[in-house]
Each structure stands twice: as structure tokens, then as C-alpha cells.
Amino acid sequence: TCTAPVNIAVIKYWGKRDTDLILPINSSLSVTLHQDQLKTTTTAAASRDFTEDRLWLNGKEEDVGHPRVQACLREVRRLARKRRGGGEDTAALSLSYKIHIASENNFPTAAGLASSAAGYACLVSALARLYGVEEELSEVARRGSGSACRSMFGGFVQWQRGERPDGTDSLALQVAPETHWPELRILVLVVSGEKKPVGSTAGMQTSVETSPLLKHRAEVVVPERLAQMMKHIQERNFEGFGQLAMRDSNQFHATCLDTFPPIFYLTDLSRHIIALAHRYNAHHGHTKVAYTFDAGPNAVIFALADTVAEFVEVVRRSFPPATNGDQFVRGLPVGSAVLSQELVAAVVTEPLPGAVQYILHTKPGPGPQLVDDPSQHLLGADGLP
Ligand code: DP6
Image 1: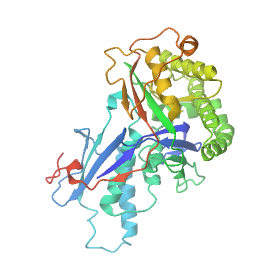
Image 2: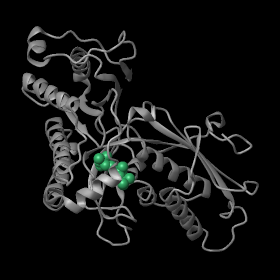
Image 3: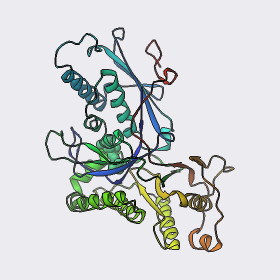
Image 4: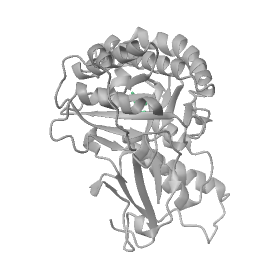
């Protein structure tokens, strides 16, 4: 049994040069979120008594034949075979046994938080553990979902695009550990009642085929930004980090509009949140909060710890909770803040009640973890959930 984290990109991955191997057109960079707030847990078991491969996601049986699940399984088994040098190690688990896999998220999938990255990173970690594989595994996780390779490490992680056609150099690397920037915090603004938009896999393919802006972004913009972003992270420069994260999110969404037919992930509410962040920063005269949006409606906000209480209060005033406000703030504790009249006047314009369901407060965290405690296994002694 293993657990694995969610990650959020500050230099976005959007577009593949090889859809089968999942090789990206540009490198990307992300922050791994702490598993105390968001994680996937996966148990994998093999037995000569199992008659078929089976998979359960959040308690519901799913198709184990999914090509991406199969790709991960095949690659981990290939590494195991290589490690055993072809000879039959009798102590090692037989690679021919059928397997059972059960996986669960500790956050509602309906919340629209990207779960495929944590899910595939966790699947690969659990399978590697089962077969005793210790090799570089981000290359395998990448075959499940591109962004999953970045969830194989904690802290700040780069997925380098690589050059080789076989993908052996398209890997994730840790840029800095989760302890590197202790003041950094993340607020996920989970928004209400949005339907599922176009998925990333289909969306990015249309973008690759039709958007000249995406081509320019991958060839010219991202290489420059990646170097700048690494420097901002090394120097713990929030001004630089935040500005660039916002610009990169905006450019990703610009490539979506440049896709034909266009794709819209940002909504009116996203635009409200963007405008709010800019008013807040303008009021303070520097970058105190930075937003980023992926292929879904939730806003992710970066801030330093000393800004969180005030900004959360600004969000509460701007999007008053629909019910009694209980559980509006979840995750790490948030202190209380009193807003000055000038701040309210400058930043809080026409409130939108109920638009933000809740705020999840978290911070950077470590990569996949091994779970020893048997009470946390998701499969029983009979191999069933
Ligand atoms: C907008 O990793 O979900 O979140 O490789 O097809 O599985 P596939 O796509 P996926 O795409 C993530 C896109 C993004 C940006 C990012 O995480 O870098």
C-alpha cells in the first residue's frame, strides 16, 4: 500500500509530441501538495488464487483493461523482469499471478480536483513495491498521465520534456524539497456547480493540431520561463514566482482560446477570482497572492503564510458561504483577520453568495509514501475491498 500526492503546475504542460508514450511538447514545473490534505491511497496484491486482474476506484469496480493502467502494469513488470535478470528468483513474487488493485482519494472526486496525477503516481508506487522495483519510476507514471510523473516527488518538481523518441529521458526531477520554502501556502478555492469541461487529453491534442500560439509557447516562451521560475524558487522570491505563475496560467488559457474550435476552462467566476487577486495585490502594492487554473474550474492560490488569514477573509466577504459558513475553510488552520475599511472598499466589490463552496488550505508536501499499518490497506486478506 502506498499513498501519493496531487501536484499543481506553475509552468503548465499542455500538448504531446507522442500521444502513445505521453511525451510533452514542453517541460513543466509543479508544486507537490501535502498529503495530509489531498492524497490517493492504493493497495496492490498478487496471488496464485486470483483468477483475473481486478481494479476498484473509490469502492467501485472499474475496467482494469484501460490502456493507461495496462501501460503502467506492463512497464513495472518489465522493470521487475529486468531486475531479476531473466532468471527465476523463487523468493520473488511471480509475475504471472493475477493482481487486485484498490484505490481511494481522501477528497471528493466530484470536487473536480485533478485526481489522475495522484492516482497514477500511487498505482505505479504500489505496483513497484509489490514487485520489488526501485528504479526511476516517473517514466512509468508518465505513461498513466503526463502530470502523474511530477507526483513521484515532493516539493518543487520539473518534468523535463526530453529529446529521445523512446521517452527514456522524459522524466521528473526534484528541483527543491518540500522543506525548501516553509512559508509557502496553497489555497484551493473549490467552486460550486460546474459541469465537467473537455478533458485534458482530448483538449491538448486539439490545441497541438490547431494553435500557433501553443507552438510558439512551447518553442520560445516555456524554455525562458522555466529557467526564470527555477531561479525564483531557489531564491524563494514570491514576487517573481507569483507573477510568473499567473502569467503562465493565463497563457495556457490563451492557448485554449487559440485552439480551434476554442476550449473554455475559465468561467465568469474564474475571471472574478482573477480580478480579485489583482485588486488585492494592487492594494498592497506588490504580489501577495498568485492564482493558477488548470483544465477545470477550481482556482489554486499561492500565498505566503502571513497573508493567508487576511486573504481568506477577503474571499469570505467576496463569496459569502451559502449555508452557515461551517466548514468553509478546511485543511490547515487559518487564523482570524480584521479587514481595514480601505481594504474592503478597494478589494471587495459586489459579493457573489455561494459561488465558492469551500477553501482548502494546504502547503507543499512530500512524494509517495509507503503505508505499513495493515489497518490502512484497502484490500482484505481475501483480496477484496
Ligand atoms: C492543465 O496530465 O491530465 O493540468 O497526460 O493526457 O493525462 P494527460 O494529461 P494531464 O494534463 C494536465 C494538464 C494541466 C497542466 C499541468 O498539470 O501541467
